[in-house]
Amino acid sequence: MNINNNIKKTKAFSLIEVLIFITILSLFFIVAVSVMIVSLRASKINEHKILAKHYAEELYEWLRAEKEENWGGYSATYPGSDPETFTYKATKLQHEYCFLTSPIVEWSSPANFDSCSYSLNNGIFRRYVILTAASPDANSYINEVKAEIVVDWEESGVTYSVPINSTFSIWEKIY
Amino acid sequence: MKKAFTFVEILVVLGIVSLTLPSLFAIIFTIFQQEARIYALKDVKQQGDYVLENIKFTIQQKALKIVDEDYENDVCPLLTSPTPTPAPQIHIIDNDQNTFVYFVDAYKIASESSIGTRSYLTNSRVRIENPGFYCYKTNSFSPSVVVVSFDVSNSAADITLPYRTSFKLRSY
Image (cartoon, rainbow over all chains, first blue to last red):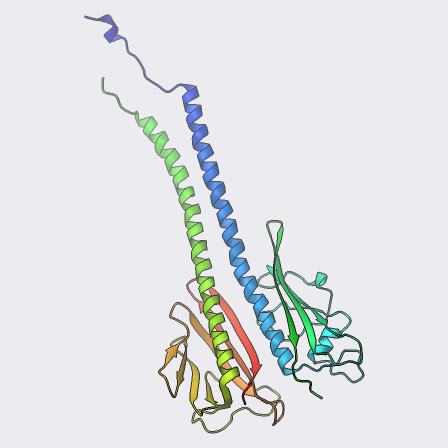
C-alpha cells in the first residue's frame, strides 16, 4: 500500500492566477462598456443632426416663402420702405434674426446671433439666419439677398452646427 | 475522490455573472432602442421631405388654379384678415384641364387625378396629422399664394415633425 495515496492533495488557483484572470476580465468589460458608450453618444449626436437639419430646412422654407410673398426691393434706409418686406429685413442695421419656435410664426426683432439662446426643442438647439443684401446702398433696387442659416447645439463640450447657405434672388423687377 | 466545485464557489460565480450580465444587456438594449429611434426619426423626416417637395413642385409648376370640390370656382380670396381657414384637402386644375386633389386618407397623404388612380405619398409607418391647405391672392391679377402645412409623426417613437411651406403658382 502506497502511503502517498493517502496524502490529501488540495488543487487550487494561486493568488496570481486569480489576479490575472480578474484583470483580463475587467479590462474586457471596461473596453466593451467604453465602446458602447462611444457608440451611444455618436448615435445621440446623429439624432440631433437629423433634427437640426430639419430645423434648418424649416427656416429656409419659411424664408423662401417670405421672399416670394413680400420681396420689397428697397433697403431699410430708403424713404417709405415697407418694414414688412424681405429686403427691409435684410438691410436693417442688425440683419441677424433668431428663430426659436417651431413651427415658425413670425420675424423676431433683429439682434446679434450671439444673444440667441439655446432654447429650441427643450433647450437643445439655437437657430439663426444672417441676411446680407447684395447692394445695400440706400437708393438702388435690391435683387439678391444672401442667407446664412445656422442651427447649432452643444453636446459633451463640443459645438455642432448644421449650416445652409443660399442666395435668394428675384428675376422680375416689380415697379 | 470525486472532484467538484463547492457550493460557495458556484455562488460566487453566479453572483459575478448576475452582476455583470444585466448591466451589459441594459447597455446593449439602450443602444438598440436608440438605433430604432434614429431609424424612426429618419423615416419621418424622409417621408415628410418627400411629401413637401412633391406637393410644392406639382402645385407650383402645374396648377392653373385652386378650385372647390366640383372643380368649378376659384377658391383663393383676395388677401383678407384673418387668413382663410385651412381645409384638409386641395383641388387643382392644370393647363390641360386635368383635375387633381391632395387629401389625407387613413393618416396617409393621397393624391388622385382625373387621368390616374389614387396613389399614396406616405406609407403606414408614419401618420400625417393636421393637414391644412389654403390659398389667397395679394391682388386680383397676381398669382395665388398656396400654403401647405401638416405634421408627420411616429407615435411609437414619440416623434412629430411639423412641415409648412407656401409658394406662388407659376403657370396661373
